[in-house]
Length: 432
Image 1 (cartoon, rainbow, N blue to C red):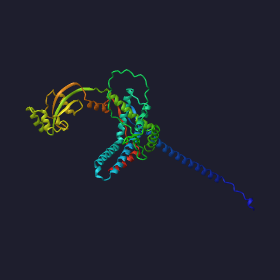
Image 2: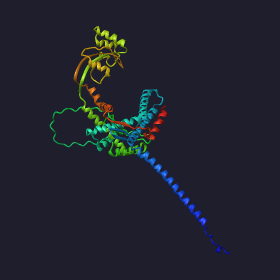
Image 3: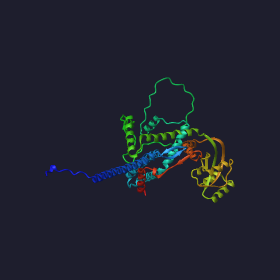
Image 4: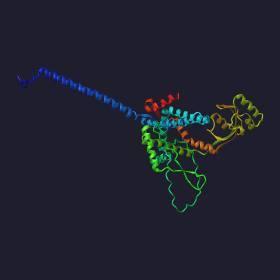
């Protein structure tokens, strides 16, 4: 029979059943594999959501019910850790230039101490950063209560100054001069607030530098260099380069960067407002003292005073306080809070010209004489400036002690970004 005459044998019923079963099993297997793949993708998606979205939106602390998110904590932590690392690298580069030359031993010691301080700040930063954000939120809430705000233009100007760009001053228009009137001279209030300075990041650093000095030639024998002011275009280029580096190396966006600057400006505004509210006078005493090491030495000094010896001469002979010894132990006028509490409690309790029994403090043993006491005396300018510069710090201390201020912390080590942890551990290993 020819090949063309051959027929394909018909599929038997048994074969049809087997083929249908195999096809069904294959479909079930494919469905199962698809289900497993979908489940894996779902698990991965859930893990990504938990790690990159849900976790970042969790509160790491609350201040009077207002949450501080992990997202904000991580942005600030990355920004400040990269700044500290950049400063540390810069210091180490400077140290390397000194080599073993003994001429620079003093400078080397100074730079090494600075590097040690930076390392200490970096190692404690993960915990301290949270406390800083809590302070920022307390400041925001108090600023809102006082209607203190920071505009977008104020943030822009703060950034401009940090990069060394200063807006041109408008030329005054000629016109009639106003009649002079008597006005009080404003007192400049010193402030200590965080100041933004663009800092280098661990790699691909960018730091604003002092504008290049361009010599000005003239008829004088020694031409003086003239600082070339930064142009607005130059500022924009350097700012953008810095922001690009910040985003790449510290994963901090421009919006997060501006919020950090806003917090610093708001602190400065509240600092000034608190400083302006401080009284310029207070209850004060004028006192002097003799400081000795032991109670027995104090008893001997007191015995000499009781016999009529001059207080100033005994202080000049015996006192261990080098700051007041030459002045006969005279401490001048001071308000409450200027001295250690045990000391000032006695000084304010004494009647004028009365001499105390020996008083022990952490500095040693004192004999105190109060010379005068006034219930409301103008503060010395130095003491007033100290109080004004510490106004915000004092207010924050009181806020943390105030039972009506509700602060909750939910810190976990897992909230510290892995890249920050790795950088800190590498530096810790190099140090120890």
